[in-house]
Length: 106
Image (cartoon, rainbow, N blue to C red; front, side, top):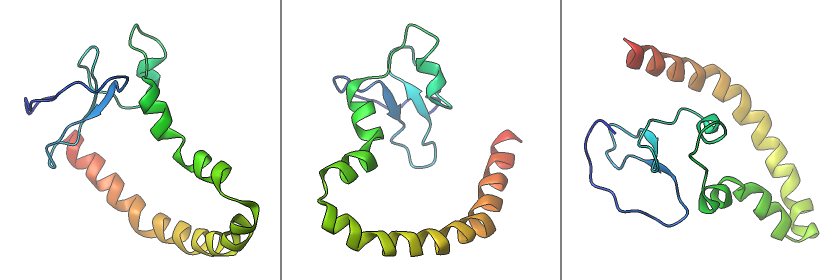
């Protein structure tokens, strides 16, 4: 990325995030280009690594590995959190994200 930080290669992990807390740019380990979304890995010689996919499906792995009674007990809490957090994110997080995007593009 643009801050020229030093990185070590992690096997099967091609999607890397800059360690600098001010930068946090995601980039491809293979070609070094910034990655805005996973479409970068679909149309080029760069391929997403197994570890990247493994980390990406964490929620599905959690649901699959959790027993049914625990999921039934957690469901009302999760549903309540969704009804509280979703409007909260629309009201507060969306304007913040848009202002950060405008700031970065300026």
